[in-house]
Image 1 (tube, rainbow, N blue to C red):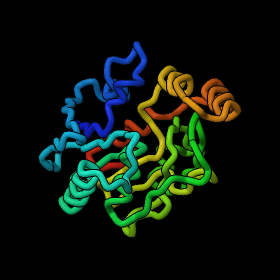
Image 2 (tube, one colour; image 1 turned 180 degrees about the vertical axis):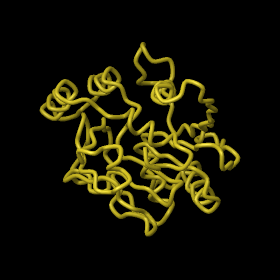
Image 3 (cartoon, rainbow, N blue to C red; image 1 turned 45 degrees about the vertical axis):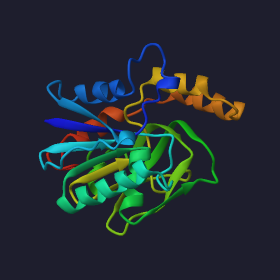
Image 4 (cartoon, helix red, strand yellow; image 1 turned 60 degrees about the vertical axis):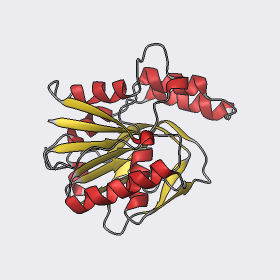
Length: 235
């Protein structure tokens, strides 16, 4: 199996000393599922994209950009997503990747009036396919976002929802799967993100930090779901 990682932000200016590159988080997530997975990086901001191949997974990472921004590389990414969807190539999106997929396929993304979503939060799992991975109906993930999907694409099916983020996860057909959360975040990296936050509400940071101690993120389950031959087939 091969995963093409479409890197939409390298976060080099805020990486902690214990993390050599941001994609290392993604390697570590999927290596828990299958240590033989091959990876190839594509710098989306430099206009680099993979060739569409039905046997490969194309994973779109987080970014500090907005999926609605009129930037050349964002426009090119949305075009790639539409082409991939037409070809039924496998797409997985985390955070900004989730938003970009929704924006490209006819949904709407915008800054949320609820502010910064951070820490480990729970979503209610509502789709039967997702319930096979989360049988208790709850999904816990790390979050770090200000934008949200405000309207689902016409073809999308909602997987998980919450009061803070109504469109928290979605799928399209058997080839597209995406999450507002960050399945790749570890507790150590999530703590680093909170420590690096500038100008954020101190009480919000305190509660988010507490959530890292009280809850366990379930990113590994997302890794398993994303790595199947067709996304979200039964376990």
